[in-house]
Image (cartoon, rainbow, N blue to C red):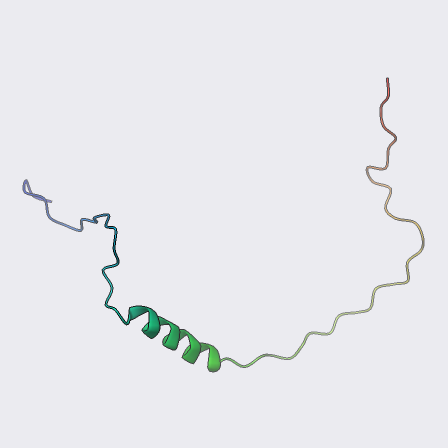
Length: 66
């Protein structure tokens, strides 16, 4: 940076500095990329064991009334 400024200076603006069709171009590019994707195989997980009727006991304490 020199005495007169320089370098990368950002400025806050109330408007977009993009071209008018920039949003449509980004959407088109995103859709094109998404269409190139193919889903993988659905993972198979082991079935949960039958419920034993007893939930976990951690934190299972009565309220302190005194």
